[in-house]
Amino acid sequence: MGLARIPSLMFPENEVNEMDKKLLEILVCPVSKAPLVYDKARQELICWESRLAYPIRDGIPVMLEAEARRLADEEVDPSA
Image 1 (cartoon, rainbow, N blue to C red):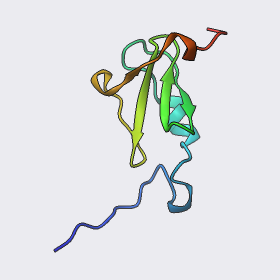
Image 2 (tube, one colour):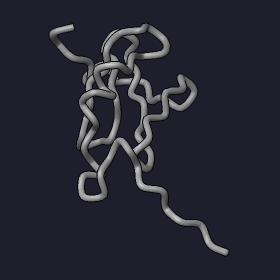
Image 3 (cartoon, rainbow, N blue to C red):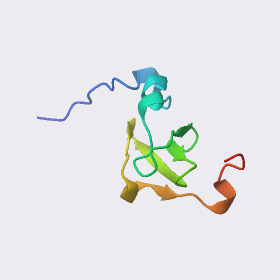
Image 4 (cartoon, rainbow, N blue to C red):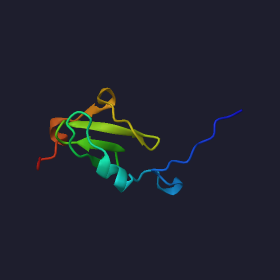
């Protein structure tokens, strides 16, 4: 008995690297409650206010502070 991959409602099979725009509109940083920016290349959701980058693993945003990556000074959005 093997495991079957359950299709993701957020990511159609042919668009695994695309973030659902409606989901992105409602997700906020759990630390600062600020909006997030989707980084497609790194597969992360970035919060400029808290300087954290939350990973997206297998199409699922991992919105835990303990799993987030701290942004380096040179990565911080200069317009923030």
